[in-house]
Length: 165
Image 1 (cartoon, rainbow, N blue to C red):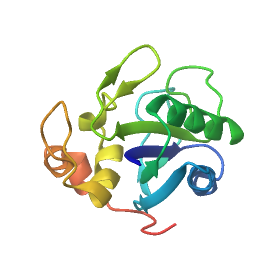
Image 2: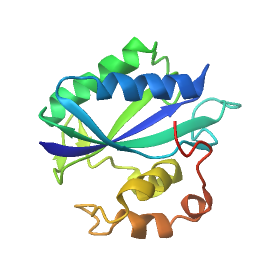
Image 3: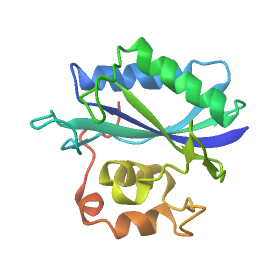
Image 4: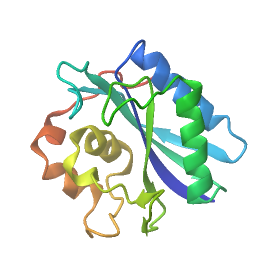
């Protein structure tokens, strides 16, 4: 079994229902076991069209027998099942699932970049990730998630809107 961390986000429609749906779609997959779920955090949309609605975000820790590319396909299928469309980069979306870490693998190709290249700059990832995996070591930056979160002022100030969901 491989441990992976997945970031979930939604800023369209019933955001919490979409997050729950994504979590449930992943956790009911035969080759994925949900280990931990962070609380749900609300943050302003980063990038995208002006006046984009705020996001709800959470992070899941899962164990899987899938390889990284197969897990990516499961994540993309879950997004599609919840009506994700991609009209433009950073457009509002019903469900977004990002692979953050896949064990300590480092992958950089046209399909997948691991660890996710923006983790250290994204409070909406760092706060929920630190909640469930503060001692996780970033294999490229050689810093723990707690250290990365402490260096991000916005992440330090975030508290979960929904501690359990």
